[in-house]
Image 1 (cartoon, helix red, strand yellow):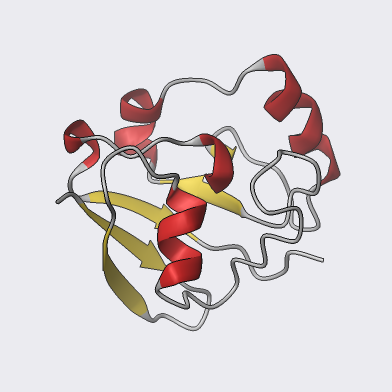
Image 2: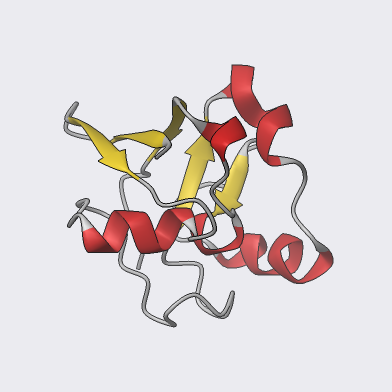
Length: 107
């Protein structure tokens, strides 16, 4: 099972077993990762699961689709070139060791 590393603003690092086929958001919520609010439940409608993908790994997750790209304009924390909605990133074996940073605020 792939492991995803969530780094929270307080410096905590959480290594989470993320089942292939699930979203990063689902993995974070099921492991109580602080800062992933996920108000809309993964429908790309709220931007409260915003994360920053480690710049060295951004190619692994690919670019956001048009809906996600538009929703990223509404994040509470500043959008960056590596911003993604964790609900839109599907876990695969290729993402084993992926590092994402949780922003200071989501809402």
